[in-house]
Amino acid sequence: MAGNRDTLNELLSEQKKKRSLASKIATIAVLVFLIYSLYIVISQQAELNEQQKELASIKSQITAAKQENDEYTRLLSGEDENEYIRKIAIERYGYAYPNERRFYVASLG
Image (cartoon, rainbow, N blue to C red; front, side, top):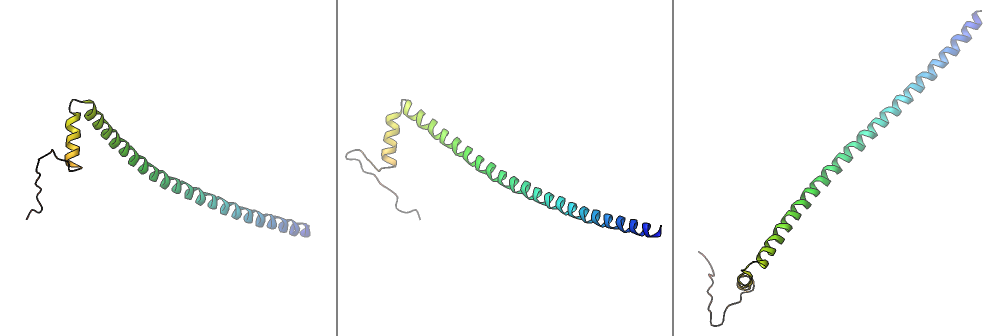
């Protein structure tokens, strides 16, 4: 009977060791999975923040372009189209009427 008990105790001891090893491996696997999941969540959050900034920038560009387009539409559809063209010709391209003299300030100081 003592021999059977020793054999039984050895079998139980081996099973406990196997369970302990399996438990350690399972714990390590769960920790690795949690760390990987945390890494994925953080990287996706960073990418999401970057894309939100880019979206805000694009929206502001769209708003500016719409305002500019509305201004051009207003200028070209209004009564002052000729005045607008005259203003651009003078300011941007330096045009002048015949026999007109333009004076420009060279320096202030």
